[in-house]
Length: 156
Image (tube, rainbow, N blue to C red; front, side):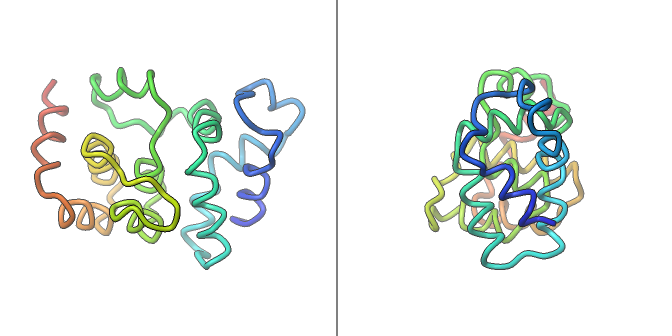
């Protein structure tokens, strides 16, 4: 099911169309919201490649942002920042608890851009909120200072 969702989301004609594509592509909203849930239960090399392709596309992340409204942490500052930018790949990985996808983003491998400190801090809040101990530990082991930034965002 993860492969089907990702193939659908990676379809070349789906770009910055946002909600207008919902009538033309009825499976789009489901695919956008649940690809990561399915990927977590059946992660393999093919799903890794398709996941990387999907989260590496700014246009696809804008589309995902439109179709998945509840991904943001509850911080007002982060919500303000997220309204300006689509989610980063590391934030999406944290949202779906995909530690196998998050790991390469912290060391800039497999064609993924290295996650910035702000993206890592936001992903830490998301991972903690979702109960993802694996991604929380991974992020803190990579850069313990993101905890300070995450806590600062929470109190604002």
